Image: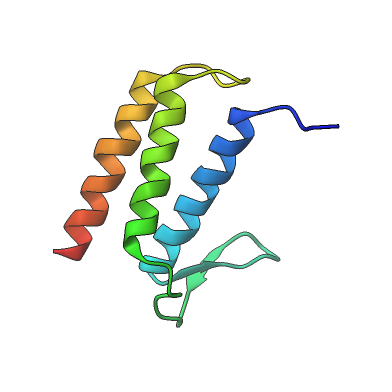
Length: 93
């Protein structure tokens, strides 16, 4: 028995990953008990920034293409590609 493709679930996990990485880059950690953000003293977790850009590009492609329980959304695709990449690049310069 194989699982059905569900790009809406994939998009949800990609977005969560991006949020976690943004919090790490900004040294913010979510308190699992309260859901509140608190300062994070850890440094880069070893995941390269290049990998983050690939995830953002994949997410944008999912939204651009649509299908498998995910509606095509050009506005969201553009927002991820342009907005998030711009912010990451600006932080690194």
